[in-house]
Amino acid sequence: MQRTLIDISLLKTLGFCLAITLFEWLTYMASDMIMPAMLTVTEDLGADPLHIPNAFNLYLIGGVCLQWLIGPLSDRFGRRPVLLVGCALFAVTCAAAIVTPGIEVFNALRLLQGMGLGFVVAVSYPVLQEVFSEADAVRLMALLGNIALLSPLLGPLLGSLLLEWMSWRDLFLALGLAAAIAWIGLYACLPETIGVVRRDGGQQAPIPLSWRETRRRYLALLRNSEFLGASLALGLMSLPLIAWIGLAPLLLIQGLGLSTREYALWQIPIFSAVIAGNLILDRLLASRRLPQLIGLALWPFCLGLLILLAGALIGVSLGVLIAGLVLYAVGLGMSNAVLYRLALFSSDDSKGLVSAAVGMISIAMMGTGGSLIAAIGGGARLESFALWAAVGGLSSLPLLYRFLRNASAETASSPHQ
Image 1 (cartoon, rainbow, N blue to C red):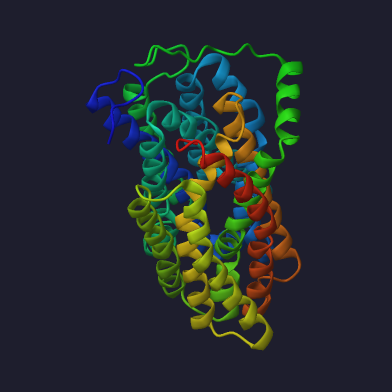
Image 2: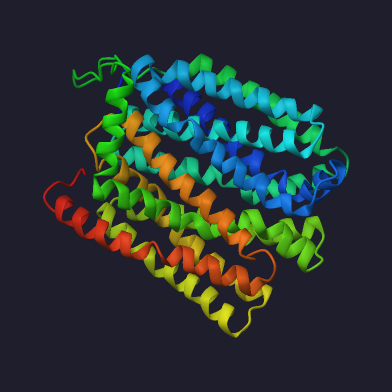
């Protein structure tokens, strides 16, 4: 790893990376660990099982709600105080689930908990880009992605095991306590990157908060076709995985009659494949330009989705469905951190605002797409899920083609794009 771009000790660098990782992991764990319990949640609260996908989709929508404001706030007041507020909000709303009286309050808390994801995307990701060089930032994004992906990998399994001796309310309380530990780590080690002189003598000055100016900057981003295409593609590429997380309890537990433990075990190959894709990315980073890496990732990505599409048309078993998702997940793991980096630097605006916009667009695409797939019957049969997941993922290809064509031309003359 190269030297950091700002003056920070090795111990604090390690500490803030670990604290950010824990906070990010918890924001994902809060969505995934509870999914095996959702049938129990709806029974305890006297609600219809149709609320099960809402637990995940509302969480994603919550991640979008405040990002438009979080990014500019962190550009004005600094990354550190804003991220500390976000971590505290997440901890409190998780702990509050222990006294949930009904499904309406539960859904509202899911929305508020999801806002923690917005702080991760809009604040912690730009901090990494501002502390580390390009190659190191991409590596760390992929590494943190690996650790965060342990939540959907271990979350359902851990959740199903914990539910054997504790209630779903206790699960949320444990998440709140763990988030409090992450807050302490961030308070002790998180550096400030706004208004701090970098090693090269440069400085990112605070940007005054003006609603009119903020609106103008967001509109300028939406008129940036490269930025918009990359952000939409990020959401569409992740849509099959997001839809699977939300609908797997219906497909496997309710539809196929599997136990919560069997349901959890079927998640392992899929999320292991995403991690494998990230590790492949780390090996290829030194020898390939970023657009080339996405081009390579599209081979397993497309092959996996074509398997799903074929299975939807001729009939699909659970094994074939998982095999297609595994191949797709390898491609997603190889491309996600790279496409995020390219989207972030497709605009010269402040990275807090750009990161917030990337997060809003991509997460809104995931949440809306996941809700749409659920509404049109994606959770009823394996074939229905395979069809709509494949259509959603493959619809990213035209956007990627246009974006990569332009990005390849630019990086040919600028290797650090």
